[in-house]
Image (cartoon, rainbow, N blue to C red; front, side, top):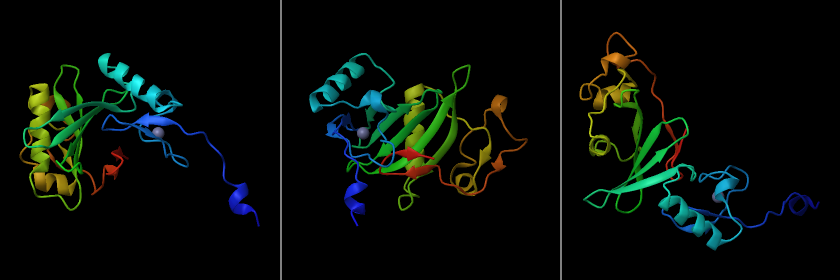
Length: 194
Ligand SMILES: [Zn+2]
């Protein structure tokens, strides 16, 4: 009878900094917060902001997964993230702040970027967003993006012939469709991959 009341657990309000660099109350309760663990949550808004400013000035990479933001000249943005394993992510956002593309790559031992996966948000495909992300990463790294040659059917149709294979890291005798259709992004609004 008192089910609804008795099951509600009280948690003190915590603050994190979101992808736009704003200190906000954390609403994550039942699922992990997308901005990181307790090390990036603070009892006050001021403390969250202070940590953010310090981490930016020292270029600390442990701030959630958030790392950097590139403003493209047409009002678009790429949010750049790097995880602890060295994989890098670029999220393309429209001038309105809608995430429309994700490019996940890694640097080889000799410092060449290879695509791990790339996805354009459903409803926004066929508008050149994949190319836009690729060009941005190429500008960032100063090198041509390459692949291992394994594609989903959608990826092969959209990009297969256009991205060179890195022969040293090729996973297959011939580049082509080596994976089933799949989505790499779990939640476009939270910028979460699978
Ligand atoms: Zn949070």
